[in-house]
Image 1 (cartoon, helix red, strand yellow):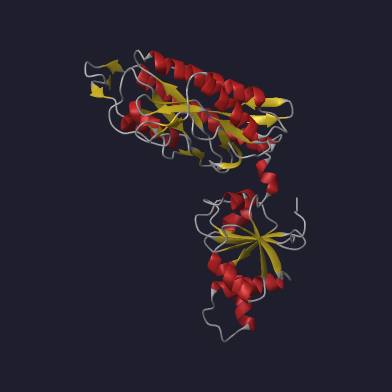
Image 2 (cartoon, rainbow, N blue to C red; image 1 turned 90 degrees about the vertical axis):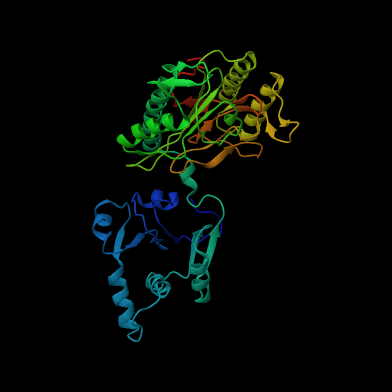
Amino acid sequence: MELKNQPVARMIYAASESCADLLYATGFFVPDPFWYVRDNQGITHIILSALEVDRGRRTARVDQVHEWPAILERYQRRHPEQVNPDERLVIAFFLSELHIDRVCVPADFPLSVADFLRAREIELVVIEDFFWPERQYKRVDEVAEVSEALRLTGQAMAVAIDMIASAVIGKDGYLYGQDKVLTSERVRGEIHAFLVRHEAVPQRTIVAGGRQGADPHEVGTGPLPAHQPIILDIFPRMLRSGYWGDMTRTVCRGEPSDRCQRAWQAVKESQEVAFAHIRAGVDGKAVHSAVTDYLTQAGFATGRSASGLQEGFFHGTGHGLGLEIHELPRISWRSMPLASGHLVTVEPGLYYPDMGGVRIEDVVLVEEQGCRNLTDVPKIFIV
């Protein structure tokens, strides 16, 4: 889908292992930056080093794979005085071979390259939002890839919950397993070991117990407390496909306070409120407002504590998931309509410095008449 007045030609210069737009366009993992060009006829090209070119010809989803030395040789035949030309000169030459003088680039295109090409009268049109608008609408095969990532994430979650559920409560109020104190680091290590063994790349997995959980992105350190909530947030990237899983559960080993139990129940019910609202055509802001209102009416206010810390529900309800862990659309206080084919997390939470945190997160597929939950891990607080 082309937006009005945009050229057909598109160009990316990045490493596809870290650039979702480039991975989406090529299906080809490369750790170093390389050039992708879609020309004015819609033919797609990539330029690779000798190290990557044979693999690229076997596996990249593009029309033409070029070897960098071959383009360099053509350039030097035209400019024999250039012994070691700047790579930017050579790419400008390649664009001229394709009769491209106006091309779309993503918002994070390298500034030095952009300035260089513009100085040579190549017009760069910066795309601020979706570089590939169709990327937000997940194909059937993409839904299957995310579902596989979620299946593995759920198995890793079971590893963590089993460790906590089987722990012994010590007289000091901490959890013990195998006669050793059970720490955030130990649980996180077992989660990561499981994921790596199954060809997934773990990131900053959250195992945050007690008051540490009051900070939504605190990964957690030290001994895990009994009788208090423990947030488990696992979000691995699948090594083969590049798609992400994302899941959060909050559990407690022991006897939590009545306030903690009410907070967990309110979060679980607010997630159901979100599920009931999500469908194609609904504004994500309306979904977020419904969740916020429900939690407030349940007696959990959002604001600042006496010491000035944030408390209550102060982050968005969800975000897009796919080749990036956080991608559009968002379900938050900003207006953003949902559409059929969107994959979004639904992750309400409550956080209080004197209590800790509670968060529950599933991933749903937005459909015309509602949403389909792709996460099937049970939600149990006391384990």
